[in-house]
Image 1 (cartoon, rainbow, N blue to C red):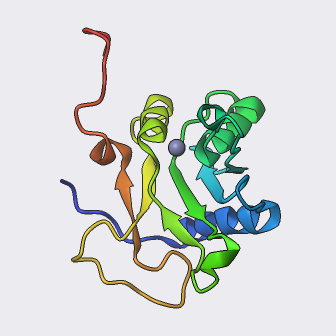
Image 2: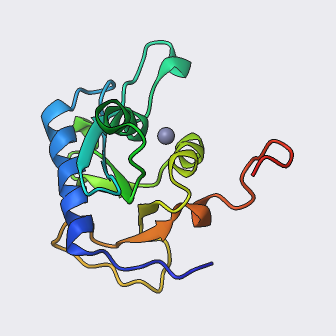
Length: 157
Ligand SMILES: [Zn+2]
C-alpha cells in the first residue's frame, strides 16, 4: 500500500466545503452526509446524500456532487473527493468528521477518474492525529488503494 499523503491547504478547503454544505442542508434521517470534489480543472462541486423511505433508492453525497460536476462540465475528472458526516442530534458530543466512501462510491469514483485522490479518516495509525483543524487525522489516498482488484468485465480494461 502506498503511504497516504498529508492534507494540503486545498484538501482542507475541500473538507470545509463539504462541511458547509451538510451544515446548510442537514435534515435528520434524510441528509446527513456532505461531499465535495475538486475537478481536474480546479472547480469545486458539493453534494448531500439523498436518503429515502425505500432504503435502496438512497443516493450517496459523492454521487450527487459528481452528478453536479458532470451536468456543468461534462467529463471533468476528479482530482480529489471527500465526504463528511454530521452526527444526528442525539450524538451531540460528536463533531462533523471525514468518512470513507462506501464500496459503491469507490467503484463510481474509480470509473470517473482512476487517479482520483480520496480524503479518508486516519487510514494508518502512523499518521498523527491533529486536533483543532479541518480534517484532523485525515489523509489522502489514491482511489486504487481503496479498491484493490476492482471488478472488470473480461478484458475490457
Ligand atoms: Zn457511497
